[in-house]
Structure formats: structure tokens, C-alpha cells
Image (cartoon, helix red, strand yellow):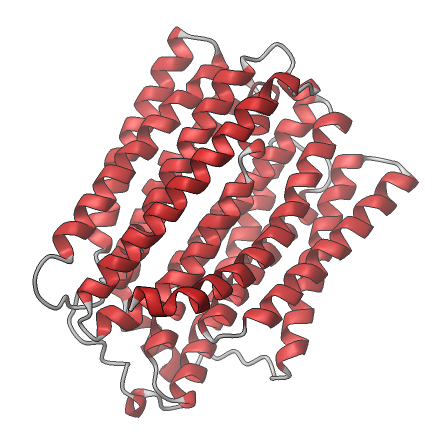
Length: 430
């Protein structure tokens, strides 16, 4: 089965990577530019804003994008797809607004201006991420990719204009990101030529509330996951200030292109895993995981070798006097481990094993925070990144082991509660 689907799968993956490459390429280029234009403190603040935005993305994906993707992929009628689209789209709007409000409040700690724009950026980025997830689940890959292109082009044009006219570069760039995300959203919605529909009616609340147990475990898991992955950013900033975080953020940026592969893998494999496991095809699901493991191993080794060759020539203000090679090695370990567990993680989500995910990420978070605190006490700040690398390896080992156990033997139940009561079209009323 895997062999027969190889050309189609690689074509779909190419389309998804293309979209991710467009927007991630813009973020990558913007980071490289700002490393040279901003002071270490201002670049550290920008990097923290991107971290905060990334946290918003994880919650929107966990609470709306991921369940929408799984359920839309399992739906057999257009009415069911529309019902889930409206339900999770409404939830995404609410959560995105909350994420933006929290981001704006946090920015008051470091910025004298631009807090509102920063909050709007996080909200719109989160909402655009949800739309992309549902577009992929509905096989609207081309429209999502065109939206990514509109985002990147408007962002690049806005950046050029902001630098031309001068002023507060950091604040202007944040405003550019607000406009670019809004443009990307408008373009995607315009291409599908469907009205935007939100609903707070009882039927929509009932559909969302039906999975509240899974959502509680999912939100707990994503919280501990964020502590594990991003705790270093806030610990370093709290103890040494934004400037101390700048070299860590800069090193991570050089490996950020690997993140686009991670996102593309989730968008590609999760709907397929949901379909396979709902039909009890566990061997095909295991084959899919093995297939992408081999691809990821080859890709990360090649990227790591290229990075090792380029590292001696990296010179930016953010990396001045920093142990560049060590930072890049730790960053490579982090991204490699994350890529190797992203498909097993997606399988655990499809299986509804959010409790296991939450426990895994809790253990990893404790490992990460403890390691980072000890390293901050014992060695120079930059080496604290090693603590984050260790925690990613913990998640990698646990996820792959859990999936191997869950897929061993008979047909797994999905969503940790047996059959999905809303998979039947008759339940989608109102």
C-alpha cells in the first residue's frame, strides 16, 4: 500500500512543504535581517514575541485545528464537514483572541509601544494557522499555499517599506506581521468563495463539549509540552534579560527551516492516520510511521552536515562572543528529535491517548526545567540549550515506545472513548 501511494504522497508532501517553505522562508529571512539591524536586546524581544506567538499556535492547534483535522478526515458527508468546520472555527476565533490579549499584556514587560500590534499579530497568526489546518483536512492544499504566498509577499513588501521610511524598526515590523497575516487570511477565505460562518448555538456547543475530556488532556499536554520546549526562553530572559536569550534564539533560527517539514508532516499524515486507524489498518499505519522516519533521518543528517560547514562563517551581533558551534549542535539535536517524534505524536492524538501525551510532556518539562536551571547556575547561559535538547530526546523515546505499544495487536479505539458519536451524519443538526 505504501509503495502504491508513494508518488501521490510525495506530491502532496511537496505541496505542503511548498506552502510551509514560503511562510517559513519569510520568517527565516526576516530573522536573519533583524539579527543585523536590531540590538541584542531588541532582537531578543522580537524572538520572545515569536515564541509567544508559537505558544498561541500550539493551543489553537491542540484545541481546534487537530480535532477538526481528525474529525473532518473521518466525516463521510459534506454536512458533517461543514458542521465541524463551523464548530471548531468558532472555537479558534475565541482562543485566538484570548491568546492575542495575553500576548499584549506580556509585551508590556519589555515594550513601551507596540503591545496592541503584538497582541493582534499573535491572534491573527493563530487564526491563520487554524485555517491552514482545516484547508489541508478538506484537501484545499492549493488555496492554503496561495494564502501562504500572499502572506509572505505582503510581509516582504511591508518590511521593505518600513525600512525605507525608517523609525522604530521593531514596532514597524510587528505591524507589518499583523497586516501580512490578515492578508493571508483574507486571500484564503476569498479563494474558497464560502461565507464565514460562526455559531455559538447549542448544537455547536454540544459538538465541541462532546470531546471535553480529550480537550482537557490535550490542553494539559500542550501546556507541559510548551514548558518543556519553551521554558528555556522565559528562564533565560527572567534571569539574564532579553539580550542573553538572543544568541540562543539566533542559533535556533538557523535550523528553523526544519520546522516547516514538521508542520507539513502533521498536515499530511494526521488525516491519513485518522482514516487508516478508524478502519483498523494498524499495519499500514505502522508502515507510514516507519516510512517517514527513514525520510526524516536522511534529511536531518544532510541538513546537519550543511550547517556544520556553514557555522564557522556565521557573524551577527546576536551571536557575538557566543559558543556558536555548541549552540548549533544543540539546536540540531532539538529539531532532529522533534521531527522524529512528530508522526508518532500525531498517531497518539488520533488514538486519543492525550493522557499519555500529557504524562510524557510533564516528565520532559520537569527534565527540561531542572536541566536548564542547573546549567544556568553551573555554566555560561548559552549552554542552557543543552537542557532543552535532553528533554526533546525524552519525548522522542517515549512517543515512539507508546505508539509501538498502542499499535501492537488488534484494532485500536480512537479518541480514547471508542467510536466517535459525532462521526455519524445524523448527529449534525443545526
